[in-house]
Image 1 (tube, one colour):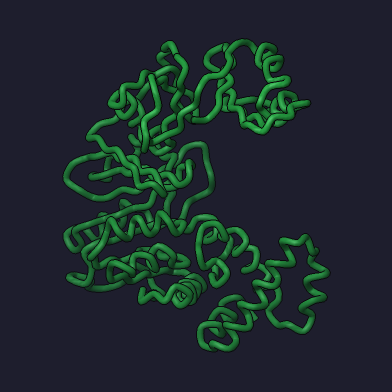
Image 2: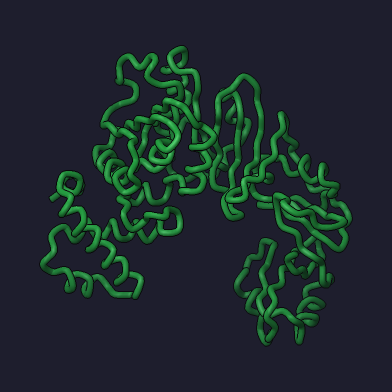
Length: 385
């Protein structure tokens, strides 16, 4: 039986759905305990559709930290990798509260499911398997989101039915540089097709795409982080350009009509260092934000920037570190011996991260964590505030 037929049977037979969920979650447990495929097949030798169940078990393991009801979800490998996690999806749902949303290319349906708590939403996808997955996932979350199989460019007259088109398009192959044209459906095609019919457009874009590649998408560009990692770049249509950084789960944010393309300033540093949240860094808002807090730039690197501060401020969009010791590598290594530190984390690009980390941790018996920055040629040992 094909996966599509398996999903259809799940959708139409509640008893079969319940039994399959139980089997898949048992397979998950066995996988996490290290059982190999032969032992799993032996335990389920009388079970039909074991291959399909095993694949869904792998996906559930992958999304268990992204969704509260992961043990009831149905996702293929792509959906498990790219579906918007629950916390950002809830944030977006609140931001677009009260809309009539068309989700163009809804995939496994997770963003639409969370949209449905505050808005009326219909998801459309060309892939029948993903439509079935979305319908099953809506059942898991008791959602009234509607999912249909079809082509968004062949829906006929949609005038008045929707006020917002949302799209989280399929990504192309990973490359050094991202372009709108590699996305499917292409946001520019959606804009051209629905302009004059629907007034609002929201696009989920690859976070690393260069801002100068987005000049044809007007309105807000919002960079969103989750637990200290960049998660999403979202374009919200509007008359004027605005850049925003949002840090979840705290909800702290910062916006500006312009951004600064900052370079390494080579500034001096003092007792306290501050590393802005990735949402600030990748939006190029970190300089404006930090200067507004009285901080001074020290160094901008490939994946982060470093500022210096006179003290720490509660509810800041980033992390504070107190300098403990600075010097060359051997000075830091010698200082660590017999210190309060036991775990060391390198906050600079190292060609041998784990080798250097293990070398520095060798013989340490403390219970504190140390963080080592490299500011130009100097190593700086810090503790997190």
